[in-house]
Amino acid sequence: MKLLVFAGSTRQHSWNRKLAAVTASMARASGAQVTHIELADFDVPLYNADLEARGTPPDVMRLKQLGHEHPAWIICTPEYNASYPALLKNTLDWISSPVTSDPVWNDDFRATRGKVVGVLSASPGALGGLRSQSHLVPLLLNLHFWVAPTNYALGRAADAFDAQGQLVADASRHKVQAVIDQVLWAADRLA
Ligand code: FNR
Image 1 (cartoon, rainbow, N blue to C red):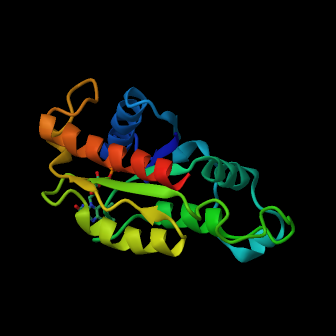
Image 2 (cartoon, rainbow, N blue to C red; image 1 turned 135 degrees about the vertical axis):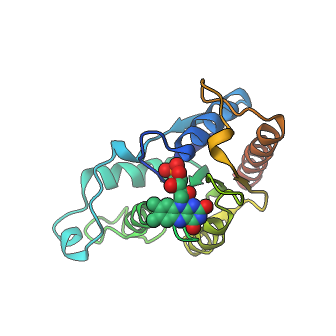
């Protein structure tokens, strides 16, 4: 199963980037064919329809293609003001916007429709960014994802990783594994 993993943060020492890296490596160990991307590697401007009318940026096309090629996704989201960050909204808005000049991509949800997505979050706070998920999930449903009902919010993230970036607690690893297992299972069933 092809699984796309990314975090909604580009911060150097981001907890969500660490969580995405752990998730990618655990999913590989579970037999998935994992593509772990960093949003910092994609040159994606703030969405503006005037800009889009001049041509969809090449890195947005790369993201659309990646989305389309992966039946399973896992997103690790930070929590900003009890919601998810603008970086994620901007990325998903671009990915879901039709390319009206291109018959293949002239479809709002080609990159996201029918994909299975698992949602993780991490925060230094006790709730682990859980409130970000309550906003992100409706957005994902609107993009026609199948959202895995098993999720995980990693609280006290500053204490959760060792120096090698591994999760310290067995309980945290089990929770992440449960999300991976469910996403891979559901994507396999839908395929
Ligand atoms: C935050 N942070 C935060 N944390 C939280 O648990 N609940 C919240 O509502 C907020 N709100 C918030 C707003 C803004 C504007 C910022 C910049 C930050 C803290 C946030 O969880 C923390 O900075 C994380 O470390 C961000 O995730 P990454 O970059 O570590 O993945």
